[in-house]
Length: 245
Length: 300
Image 1 (cartoon, each protein chain N blue to C red):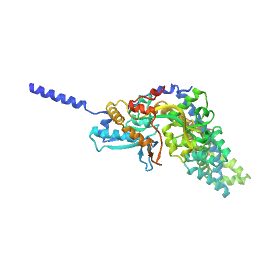
Image 2 (image 1 turned 90 degrees about the horizontal axis):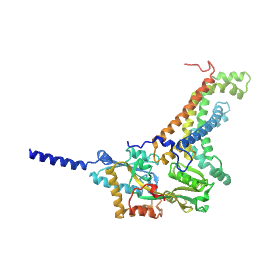
Image 3 (image 1 turned 180 degrees about the vertical axis):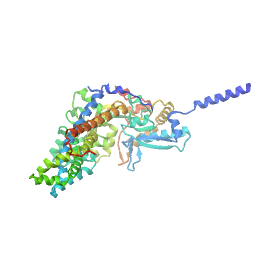
């Protein structure tokens, strides 16, 4: 293969810009991290609520939780992103629609974070439900017998155990959030994927160097998420709660 | 003994002659495998795009098939198989470099940076980067767009051109980006952007195929003038000579003008609308003096 290698490309100045390609990559990394973390917060909050709702006695609340999970789990993330970005504003009143389309600050970032957050929340909800259902029913009954209300039972008895149990699958989900955030480029977020595509174009085709750098940065993000969750897992461990095999 | 020497001399000279005609590079690869692979674009109208039956058609596709005919004649391989491989602006150069694609028939700008990786056929189209707007907006120049959202497509030269324009004129657009030209056009169509900056032939094609073509106009001075050419592997003199001769032949015989008229000034699929896109002086010049000069040579 007759490829023209140029690893020095990262130190080269981007034409008509004050930045180097390396700085571009770091800006891209910043947006990737921002979208991923925002989405993860949304996913944890909404996922915990919806997952819990699926385990309560009230059938109506169960239905809400189920509808939430099935909606966000059964539609591809890219389609969801386009629905939020291109379709939803068309249903708003004219003036508000124009504001959302043209003047809303950080509209691409917010849309991408919310879309990815809700998509991931469906998956987190299923894990929360699984965590809760893996506990013996006696735990819930014991809480109620002690005089706790149902919300108190969840808050002080069920959820603290359920969350500890599901840390490993949540770790995968957190890592997935970083990787899935690459769809954000499709609505124009300046993330790592966006920067890579633009950098390939503006360097006249230094594809391998560019993708190698992007791959490394995504890897570091996912790995950092993994280590952070491991740390939380070890810090929150209650001896004897989850029996080691 | 003398006779033997003579025979040896004759034999060696025959060997030399046949060695001179030995084929190598892409032509050897094509001969050995019995097939040639064209890189095509799926939505770079009217140079290379898919029709209603998902068959690739376009101005550059027609030219590439003329080159394929020349390859068949040169290798005496009338049954040469032709494969088509869809490429994108991200992977087209690596696919040519690594041998997946032998001839890229899309809409690639010939630039000095790219010439480090690949070679180009003589320029067969010249595009001007301009902008599409809704006529009702009354916009005629980029300089009116300070603070307004302006769309372009990620991974294209237009992103850099807009950046340069902003810096040169000290204005500040709110850039919005589509992931492909269709998405960028949707940004304009749905009022998320007031202008879409792109190659004028692509804009003309998008407008001709939009729901309400009369609503749009291509306006403003050219941000850049870029030579578009068919791309092939670098350092392959035999194949390059064959490609160059074929394209120059089309230019000399005037056949290229017929091809241009077929794709740019006559009704074309999928909607049977004409782009009404008259040949620019820059392209007329490139046809009168065939060359593979990069975009840098077009900057004044």
